Image (cartoon, rainbow, N blue to C red; front, side, top):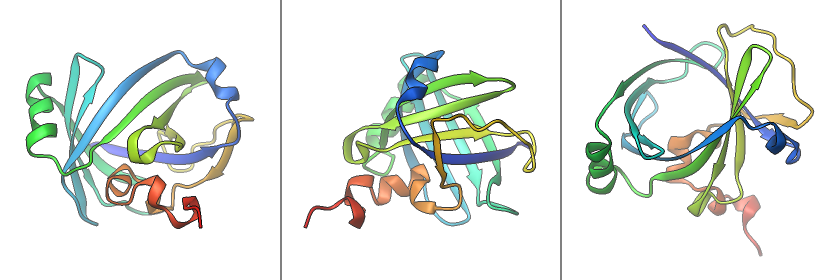
Length: 164
């Protein structure tokens, strides 16, 4: 059984950009959505694609079951175009290695332009880690920041992002 323990944060500034080890453009679309599970396809760069199944969040809300399987890129692209719910998520993921953890920072495009979220996967819910100076408010418990929900209610449609 695969358990994902993940925390999400907003960023205070762009200081993280100078620490990036690598980056990768990603497009992902959901085949199933709901409170109990999600099924998505993701194309990472030009040469990787995955089918991913996640359960609802468990316990403290930062853990859930996750299963991921590599699939052919051409089939993943066809699924995105022909089967996945629209709009799909378009983002660049930046990787920063810090001590024993890897930060993944997602910068979103399209209807989610302007949103940048840092994620960290942990080996245990109570795992202690150093908080970088560029890390802001934790949003792990805010469902608006889940990628599946960003597809349904994009960042640029949030009331606080609207001009009156």
